[in-house]
Each structure stands twice: as C-alpha cells, then as structure tokens.
Image (cartoon, rainbow, N blue to C red; front, top):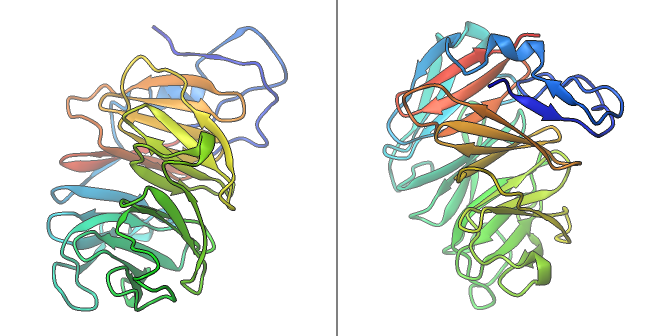
Length: 311
C-alpha cells in the first residue's frame, strides 16, 4: 500500500534536505501520494554503503557528516570521516578510571562542530571532548568538583542528558526526575520537571534531547509520550498521539519528531501533529537513526546503513 500524507497546513519554510522532505504546497484537504524522492529509498532496500559497528553501539553524526559510534561495552569512540567517504576512521577512549577513561559508557552527544559529550554512568560524570577526542574537562557528580554546588545541598546521579548547540547541558537526575540546566561555565542555572511539576511532571522519563528550536524534549516510553519544555523550563505541551505499534526511541530533525520502532519509523510534523509511517523492510531490528543533508543513517546490530538522499 502506498504511503500517504494528510496535508492541511502551510508549506514548510524551505525544502527540507533529508528523508523528511515533504513537498507540501498551500492549504489542501486532499490526500497527497508519497513524494517522488521517496522512491529512491522506499523501504531502505539498497544502502549506499554499510559501516561495521562495535557491539552495543550508540550512534551520532556531527555537522560535517562524520559518523561517531560509542561502544557501551568497551568505551571506545569511533569516528568515520565523511571527507574520506567513510573509509578512514579515528579510534579513541576505552575503559579506565583515569581522567579520560570511562567505565560504563551510556550516551554520546555531538551538539556542534567543536564539542562531544560522553556520559559515564558508573562514575556519574559527563566528559567533554573536542572533535579530535582530546579531553577538555568533565562534570563529576560524585565530588561536584567541577561546578559550584555542595553535596549537602543537592545530589545528582545522571540518568541521561542533552546538550543544545551553544553548550548548555540538561541533566536528568535519576533520584528526583528533575532536569538540571548547566550553563557554559558548568554552573547550575535552572531546575525543572520532577514528579510534582503540574502538566510537566515526569513520572517515567527515559531520555532528553535539546533541539535547535531551543525546546527540551523528554521521552516517557512507558506511557508513549514526549513532554516538551522551553529552554527556561516552562512546560509547553505533550506529544502523545497513539501509534499502531510501540516506539522505544525518538529523534528530532528540523520541525519533525521521529519515533523509532524495530521495523518502522513514524514521522510527526510537530506544528500540526500529522504522522507518516515508513516501514523498514530489513530482517534486523532498527536500533537508532540520524539524518544529514546527504544521508539517512540507520543503526542495526551489525552496522550503520547509509541511504543517500535524492530528490
């Protein structure tokens, strides 16, 4: 059955340069057939190429299209260089208790061209590296040595985190489900959320993403919803439109929210809440995905599949 898109909103501000391009023009109540550009990657059958992945990998892609993989098993970070068609790579990191070592690598975020953040869950700290994997500093939530708070005042054990494009850090505390915002000087400037925050209460938070729209998106996979705050911690709205299957992870791109399930992705145009489902016709379950202007990157257990964007 061909995919269709219910269109009843103003056109996008420009032609979106990824899988999420939806050629909408003007106001209309009719059904739009799937765009021609989708024919080249419909079902994700033939990848441009496949990059082998380490076991238990976390996927990120920087602004230059470099693929960055974090192995949760080994703590190693792999960077596959787009400038060399991904044939060349850099490897750094690894398990260790030193300044640059990690014991339990849990998440990696690459918010801009200069910085890379890694959560070491076992040591309750977030490492800041440059894009050549050189250590800059870390936030140690056990000793609080990197920022001006006292352990007598507050205890933070990071469950997950997000970073916006200017380097402000949003840390979800697994002890109280509050989100603590750290400024560029590693000082706490704000806290919000928690279990008693009105419509913005967080009862089962799983992940955080800080988007380019300056909003903070928090997933609650148990209740299949995403709670949205602005950059100052004000609750904005909840996205909880029911899908025909359970999603376990989400990503953001431009004005779109992408819900990830093992064998499909669901695109939601945030301003109108419209949904589009795209099946993944591969045998292996999908783990994660990323987008750039040139490729969509699908992470599976044994590799990152690159699909070139056309149209």
